[in-house]
Picture 1: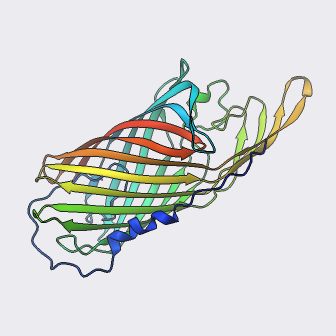
Picture 2 (picture 1 turned 180 degrees about the vertical axis):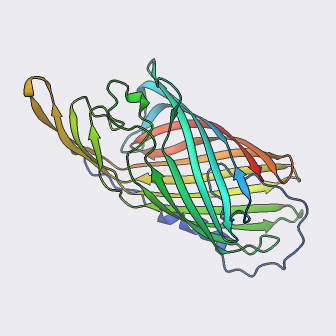
Picture 3 (picture 1 turned 30 degrees about the vertical axis):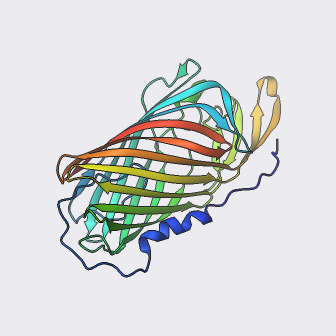
Length: 331
């Protein structure tokens, strides 16, 4: 059933936060910084590329809990049943050239809701990324690092033909490509400790329609034959890290994302040759969140960050609390 049109909140007003890291102000003279180690914030990507020939592994452990949903007006409503999911992610980054980094993102997840759950820990869709450094930072970080990346989703996880095990759907079936602009700059505080600010603006155009058969991740029943037309995606995040000393760092991400309107169309083939049409429009969704964290860096090679992403507002999507941890290893 077609839903009423709701005014969509734009993300353009947040663009100045991203551009702050690239401000044309006169940079301070390049200084020799004291010993500083970073792990990186939990949400906003690092615009710096990996040194040629180097390898960085960053395993993540994530738990997501949701028992409310934001309606079209932004009001939070209780869900009939709470849901939870464990995720294990493994981003693998390799320095291909002095300014070019390749990245492979792998993952697995297990979902539970209303006493039902996935039959086992299931692989999620993988993705590949190429990132190019447009401007290298100065030694003290006061000249910003600026880069771009393109990322493509790989269909490595099931998303339809699930029989009666809908919770085993860990994929999207969408051949989605994402383009991102990244920037980062360091500001030196009066106490000679650095505050590092980074920003990420990402856009994904509407991908090709996803062919569906039977039970799927898009809430289709057995006997369904049709297509799902995903919407475009837009997201913006700004991250900050304040170095207390060579080991301890305070981190914070503020992020916003919007999923465009999507459409489902097809037919359900029932018993005895019966057949009926199934049409649905999924209205746009938006969510705004904060992710505080704290880093402990053992040295320049190993670092740990723990924190929690918490939704603070949204439209047509679930509110959530998501504790998470990431361990950064550079080789």
